[in-house]
Image (cartoon, rainbow, N blue to C red; front, side, top):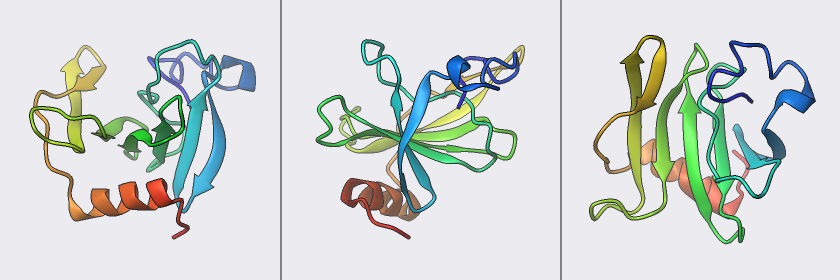
Length: 129
């Protein structure tokens, strides 16, 4: 699991270069957590594994904070947030190319699709697929 270009720079080729660790598997979703608990809780920008889905929980462990789907190239496609955003809770954001090889969250929040609702429910209930 890399983030912010660490995959491209090769920093995640060994465990020491990774900022996250996998703590569980829920179907095809890997539940991860930041190694440094003092850092802001967020998901990686990219993944070594094409098509990966990662989820991360809040510090208190009471609910999912976010879930993201990564594409064939390892880049984030969308990210679900469980916090309220302009009246939507939960909601998701699309990720897009920002130019010069950079990616970022697109403006706007959207209602979850049926598939996203299913993924969120399974992770919250820790169901196997």
